[in-house]
Amino acid sequence: MQEEPVTCRGINGSISISKNGMSIIVGLSSAQAYEIRFGDISAVVVERKSVVPFMTLMILAVIVFMVARYNLFWFVISVNNWERFITPVTSAVAILCAIVTLLQLVFVTVTVRSRREPLTVRLVPSRSAKRLVRRFSELCGGS
Image (cartoon, rainbow, N blue to C red):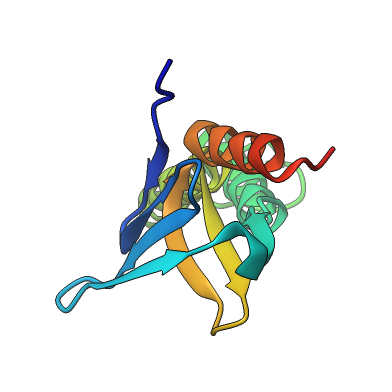
């Protein structure tokens, strides 16, 4: 039975793995194709960006929004004059940080290290990157 090659696509290219090796296409306008045998590959690295900085900024923006919108600390400071400015700015910051956090949770970067230069494909869905690494491990006899 012929097995389907596992492919993962990102924003700047795609990686396909079959019994013979990996086929990598990298580049946006002038795409370059590489065929790499398994013996030449030293590592397949899946990296996820940290979500902590944007999540922290999002939480701080929500706290400032709540304080400004509902005047929670009325006994300490009055923000009535600034509420019309603070509320939309903190809302926009919180929404933007939430979007970036979700993107960093859903997408990863896949780097294939070989005897040549490392080849990197960005914004690859996590699920397809996991399938690619699992298939690579099966075909190379790794654990």
